[in-house]
Image (cartoon, helix red, strand yellow):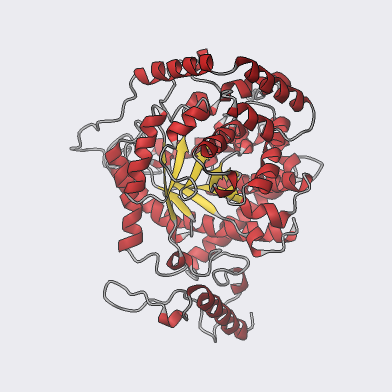
Length: 560
């Protein structure tokens, strides 16, 4: 690189900073605890031209290795979004209000297993599971109770659900309508990532093709009606929690993202229009520097592929924006108080890697849903990082570290090799075809299983030491008091559902479901039909059952 390029790059950064902050960097002060001034960004001197610096660059510039925003957290802190859901909609609503009062910036909804599988709470397969791993949502009325008195035009809402994502989304839109908030004012994220369900989490309903049809319908509808909304959050979190390595998590997740880009283009959507509303969801694991390198490599790979492969021309269409959750799989039931330390380290890695929003796990989540006290400590962990440590004062403070840059390059190379392998799984040569072939052949699950087995063997042998598990096992700690879900939660939810069904217009419900089934046999966008059905108090389970009659149920091929 020409040394003059360093000086020009710094001037470009200064100009953007001044335009965004209204004052030049030297007058935009931040100081250390000792009072020393801190510049907003650091880089090589003008006379220094390290080889390959164009791949590192400056924050806010392609390839965005150092972050998509020039001003980093000095311009806007990351969003503190605590994942919550348990018991009844009213129980979770109360938890949301307490989290918002404690300083959380957005809400993130965890659903119970029946909801995640598209089953109503009175379904025989739901028995014993209602409200246990998240909140039970059967209808728009449940969603109204869940979001009561939350200003939905101000607070962004994230929903972690994929199989029945579109029906749940419709309950959200209708609940907001009833609260006086139209679709255009709603901001937030719907996970909708069915690829990762087939790959790792296993909460699917239909075969891949109809699931992708529903996702395409959602992309089209939100493009027209919800400019602030992110209809897909491509998730690596669940892939990593299933046992994948850092490189596998990133490669499989980016491949899924490219598959959704191809889906949008197949629907005639312009990549510069829809790509800015795709977002990602990653795991922050315990290997501190590897995680930082993973996040930096993710931005660089995504930007390059979006520009060179898919024709994105705007910065926003090349940005990889992502939410991070600390690693649930790293938490231990033994000496659970140590989990506060693990979560703090993982959260710091996410922040130093430039996450856009963050959830910190509670110390007791390895045992049960978090108590209010544990959830508060988890949130306070983020607030200590932001307010007390100084890590938000500098954009990409580890940029230029020999170790971090070498690690970023290594992760990038490993990911590119895996992406090439995925594309090669099908002769069509598209990422979508490769993903589907890998799902149907068991390639993804096999690779993750091998990685998980390698990790567990290393723990069992003592090669990898885990504090409290196979190292430093003596303890004076007492058992934790954990949150228990009362049996009445299920019986009350089922009774509310029974009363709701009795009170609605049965003939209208039948017409709405018949209309949906007829349209599902054709090619019409199904979102408006589902919205009309939800307005008539059709339940999520009834919507999914109707579509199952048309699309069929997916069965994973056996792999031994």
